[in-house]
Length: 345
Image (cartoon, rainbow, N blue to C red; front, side, top):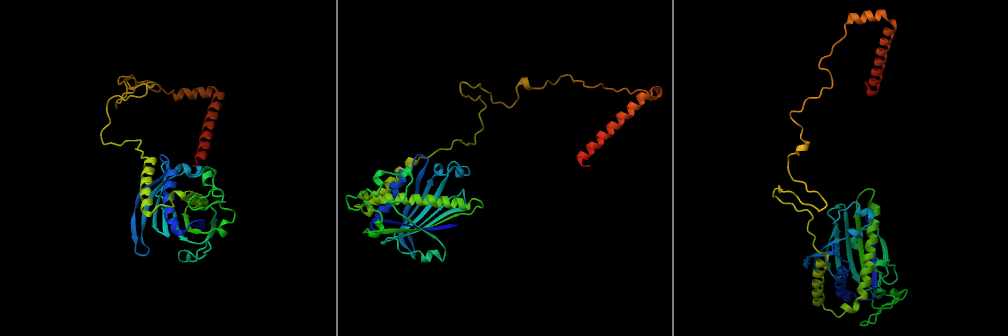
């Protein structure tokens, strides 16, 4: 298990970000989705918790096979997704991610929002329970972002909001900016597989950090698009964009159809360059063995042995021949003995 606490500050108030968060997540998911890849929304409905009160429950499928490194793509199915379930009791949210293909893999995120610059070191006092964690500050203006995500219009060092007059964030802006808020995220990653645990958990945290950096940059870069929205308006936008995102991802039918009907006995047709092959059970006549084929004789049916008396007389008459016979018998015995030794007898 690898536990980290991320602190991401923005030049917004917690109340403003309640709208901005919903807008950013919907638009970001739509931008990052493509046919077969991205975020599919399964459920998005009101939910009331006895302890936290009314909130919103969301279930999503995050398809990300092409975004995995090569060593990870080698061990996961071609269609690979992570199931994300989130309970939003703003300004307190709980998010859990899991994968049925990897039962020992899970991500758990607890988020709290406060109107400060990330100075609260005890915000997760209840959740931590004396666990050690690494604290990571994420600077939405000056932290390096992957090249594929960079957009000049979202560069907060140069962006200035027309409606709020906030922006052009300078180095050290977290110490002077007003208003300012902080997203505190306690992230637990588990991948309890020996030999891969450390590597996978560190990789997942790197991906999470990049996602947090990009998402919070965009939340402020798009502030003029959502700052005047009401909660009802942003919920309508959320529903519309989620439907568009699901259509953008698309539904893929199975490449192999399974039916209960028996296979056709007619000839199957293929490409023009391929010869047709009839579908039949019996072998072609050219491969059948003729039933009346004469048996091939590889040896005489009877074996005639020489007369032992004649052999004895011949040996007596030819002493050199007798010596050769004993030599052959001796050679045959030695060969048999070597074979026994090799066989372990």
